[in-house]
Image (cartoon, rainbow, N blue to C red; front, side, top):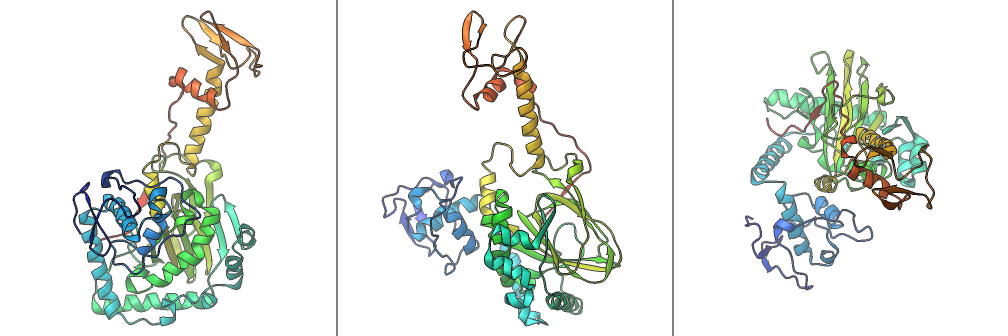
Length: 445
């Protein structure tokens, strides 16, 4: 439904039009001023939106609801849908919605004509898919239970046994069957992303529901423990695919970050040599091409059935597969809430290693700046420390410009004051190295 932003009517999910004053007395702001809260209402129980015909995933609305302003939480479901929908439409223009509709039609055409080989793959059967140790950790759902089955060879890179051999065999056979159908029908398919020339999107030939359950019931609980800083607790959409490396396939994969908040990467097989993943630190957009620090260098060798879980912004790549064929299942897990909130972020990211180094460097320079700050003619020592660099007592004072000045300040004020007095000390520290690509989901044939 088309609507002019700021108009005083309120379209609901069923096409009706309501007055902008809700029945609960809330006066709804213009669409242009719609905002989400930074922190969710953790105790709020969201409505279910599965029965509505919406432009976006029902799970997306359920996730966003907890971030609504408090006055809206008890509004009618239609009013909440409209409020959230208008926020989403700001970042999802008509051209993009048209593209999504075409992709739905493309996907439906495949599903209507492709005959699955192993139909049991298309519904989640956890006991048949996963190894017992993984299921036990998920059922206990504690950090300790997860740590018991995982190793973390490099910060933020989690590895663990996950898939049963039979599942890997069936998935490999299903992918081969789909690719055979593609060749025989000469159907033109979309490849998984903008970097891989081979592989298939699992969601496109009917595995979307199973992969959605994989994200919701297995990856999101783990991410809620280990990746809360990048929206791990609010994962609400995914992109599932397989990639293929070897002779007549992709050989390697360049240095990149994923279009995801959390990435699951599981090797399905087959026999191969090479193909190691190399990791080079987590970075935000601003710092994606900054220098790698020695402690961030880590290489990982794949093994069938074993998973790697990491932040999507963890820079990585794949070395050449030198013999045989390697096929991996990947699940890019995304959080619409995290992406929305990042639009309002103004400070340094807590999850970007370079942001944290920059923050520490600013703090170090702030301390150094307090040792010698220029006040008019000549240089005087900082009013926040003794001349020998030791902390001053609350009784000590410096006389600056003929007036007394208290030495100690409330906690946190000193750094702010130094920034105000000595701005020239604080500059970004950015060193470029090897270019890092941002790999996106392919959206067109």
